[in-house]
Length: 467
Image 1: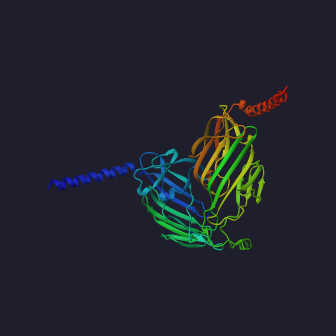
Image 2 (image 1 turned 60 degrees about the vertical axis):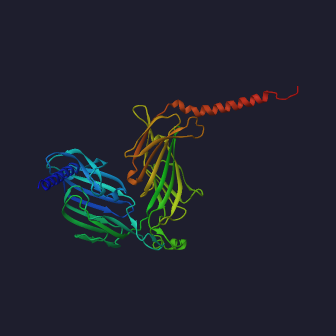
Image 3 (image 1 turned 120 degrees about the vertical axis):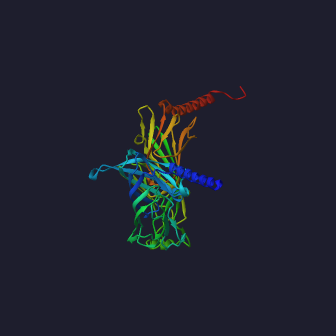
């Protein structure tokens, strides 16, 4: 009789231990979300999600961390996460940016991935705060059918959940989805679901426990082009003689539904509204002001179908590829331009020089799978360091150019899965002694001097073998 009793006690102890472990390792259950509103923008190939959360602290201890949960299938396409907190009341409200960092939890159900939002001030017991969260997804629209003809429209799938995935209890939540047109082939209905024009509404849903999930699938028309830069290499070369030379090498692809059949240039130009509506006709690059010596070429040579518009605040380069890009078509090209050095190179308080430039891709509404930024410092530069507002991979290289002796230090920064939000300033610091600017002129002067000495020696030396 004792054996069954001991087995029962052991099982009870094991269950209590597991429950204690889960309670210790799971997110704080003292927090709850009283209201959540999510708006998903599907009008372009970059999916934008705006999330408003009203978080309450129902526990007895203050907390300064709030978790965001994402399914593992979405984390692979997550480009950026930003969080703002609302301060003030009524007309005097302001938004303050908060730190957001990825977090690993050992007991994440079904491979859920987390991001932690760090509050600037702890949330005390009984208090509430409102958070504004923005996150962007790339490669989240799946073309279906995968291949279309020149005169066909582009249809895509979008997969998500009608309920917000969260480690906290949500009292009330609503999800809105906006499509680029009213043409929606099909969608999953999770009552209550309403659709009016280009907007779909899921909810409101009441009292959903943590990690609630209800998958939905939407099949709709999206004829916007899907420009994807598979690889971009930007080289920024600093010359202390007054110029900043930028060279950008692109490998561009249309990431939409692949083109099938024969391409007809006559139909494409005569009826552009019916033929190739999802094709990529031109690109727009936003360049810094006071740009000069701009060129645009591919493997064949210079491409003249480009237009440069400049003013005191910005420069816009509108470029047209040699041929329109349909789904699956690629194009490789180079954009180069020069900039005045005094607009981007400065001196810090510790007598160091630093370059202040923009990280990211100048092409508008473009996804970059891999970006490599190379900052070529002048010969003789020492102690380089880069300051980037987000995580990147960094290493140093050496480049040899004309009249270089020891080579130039190159600061290399690499990042994957970029969107236009990543177009933010970064700085590269280094030390440089002005005496090194005389190295190349002295080398040229010495070379000319030795050449003239050799000429004089040749003219005055008699190399004949007879007297």
